[in-house]
Length: 567
Picture: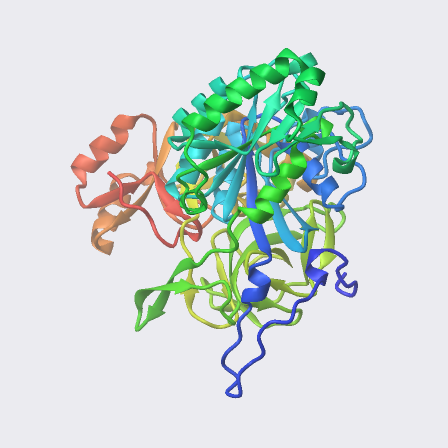
């Protein structure tokens, strides 16, 4: 696996600054400046996975773009590799792809649009420097998009907006801009503008290049196949597109008059969003987005970490160009390769350079990490990593010992935080149909729990395992995966619990008193963190009144390392 040199983005080397005579100064700034790491977010069916495919196609990473809709077709979207994804035509797990475009290394993360898998998406958003928001031009901003926007806003993540499906009967572009502004709470700056829509969709005006690209339908078209007309001869364009051209010019004038001037600093601070129009399925308007990612999106940013000095956490800012290797595990995926039963820890590099054979350490356990291989991704296709820098997403193939939220370094004591785990709202008990498969079930639930596909709770007093989820579809996927990957046929039954809170106490004695009072209500999750299971919101209130020094948390950090204060 490791032997093959990487033909893609990671294979292109740039010379970094040489070490000083003292051997201390090494800067990888030249390499980190070439990196762009972003996630694609949207409501289900807005065309996110299709757009992902087109971006890969344009960069030359794949030859034929797959379509999510083509369920009966032999080709599925590159980013949808699970059997259940191919069956249902939806994305249920985020996937990672890397490509090279204009001498920039682009790390693209496709996220599940369905709200039942929003936890996976939240985690992905902690690993990127910007987001590309895809909006269906007929439906505008939808419920799931709002939730994702909220996460981006909390983190001040810069957002590029792509209004998709302009070749269909859609809403007026001004209405869409107005809605995006209201929902995002930030002004929109149009970078392209549509001429016509639906059957009369004529193309887009590129305000950055002052030219119009003429629309022609067809999924096999490349950017160079589209006709481009400069705007210096408006009368010819008016004669060609008639009233659609006049209407587009009027609305564009209104939009540009009402929107502020483009301010790159405001965009980087998450206070402005550039807007592009197009049709992903027809490869139209996609190139403009790809160019914007290279020209406008931020390079890898500094990250906060806690450095442990004399057993006290000290905050430290880690710069991407720093020489020391550091990264954080934001996703663990079991069984990507059905033949090998492997587990891949997806690591977002925060600083330094990765080279094969490096000695690495997992901070939580202080144990050495010895991956069997380290790869970069084109969804299922993997390439051995020759070298990687801050901003890159690399996969460590392991057989355990790594959890979500783990910090990996080449020696320094750091701990990156910010990977949330939300308290589940739905619970089911797991009943195994064949008791002889208990060991396989245990393995399956351990791995799926560590992966974050579902939350697994083991009751303190014994009894069947409990599964906790944010949405119903998570249960179906886990049931399917237990059968397909671990050969465990299970039945899921309802139970009385409707929520969970992770608990901490000021002293061990207080915790002991609480656990003695509620032994039936306590369970350990995948990270061995103690949780209190409740049947109604009143349960927590009553327990809180009875034990005022016990803290109930609706959110925890991964690996159980820290909990947010909450009532």
